[in-house]
Figure 1: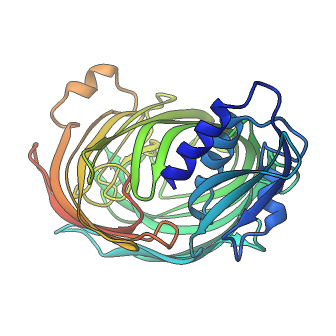
Figure 2: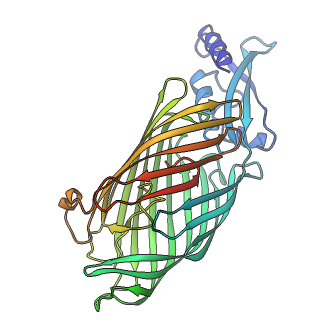
Figure 3: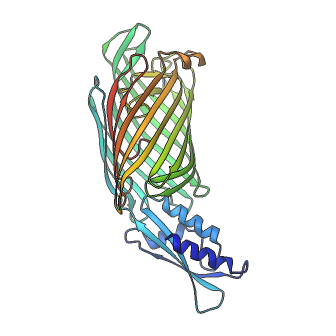
Length: 419
């Protein structure tokens, strides 16, 4: 495939600027992904000038699709002088994927989420998904995401969730346990400026229901609370990653900003924003260094229902299931991944990692980040079983062991890389 790219480069180097014209664009290797869909989202079209940068941009965009594991292009001159046929070769992923996340620690309840997703519905790279979650209580959700529903850059996403969990509420004199239910309907408009820059804008209607179970009580904190809320959401994703199967190289940034309107003074309106900065570097032939920095900030309300959680499955592997909350967060995850086996369709990858973070207490100040009560550092090791022909088919197992004050240890299972 690299050979074809080099041949195309040499071919273009010998064509005077503006002389090469594309006669036709042909798609090969696709079975489930519709040919008309690939042509719809491609920048290169019949009649356009032959441009190696535009061709490579199309390939980069195709590789980012869930239905595509790898892609390449070839260029052949037709019998008519100055006219060329372009061939896009596609290696497809299998896209009907079950998934599972299992998260626990030595002292915590067992919790898991299982589901099924189709990432290439109707051959149009539409995602349909459903999940079931057990985390003391039962939960479920449904989602559909069609990023190219209306055009090559405009789409729509809709999500429904009914989540019920046992949540710790951190009071001044101890911890209370609540049954927490969140039922929501979300609609998002999706806009792709180009294959690196994507925007989402939408609205979420949800109801929060808190019911006291056991633990510490406080006369200023209600034991029952039912609140209707309205959430406005804005997401901006920048993706500058070069993808080669499970190997990543480059920088990625994801900004998520939300403003929440509430019908209760107990849970007043607030805003929350966080940005994930991710950096990946290839190390030799089989190594990959990966890092993610999350910076989060929210309205600094003195409430036990603060938005940023310290949790096994979100940010610190091994720490436990929602062991603390805050109104600001700094979290760094860094790990080295190495493929001990890297075959045509299967890869066995090991990793060593350090997860660390700190939080601002509700109503506190930024000095809370330096408080050893809020600081968590968890080194650990893990393993990845990767199927290279199935989208996101990465089964991971991580073990994290805390080295800071009152640390825990635990195992986290899941589908897909942790970040």
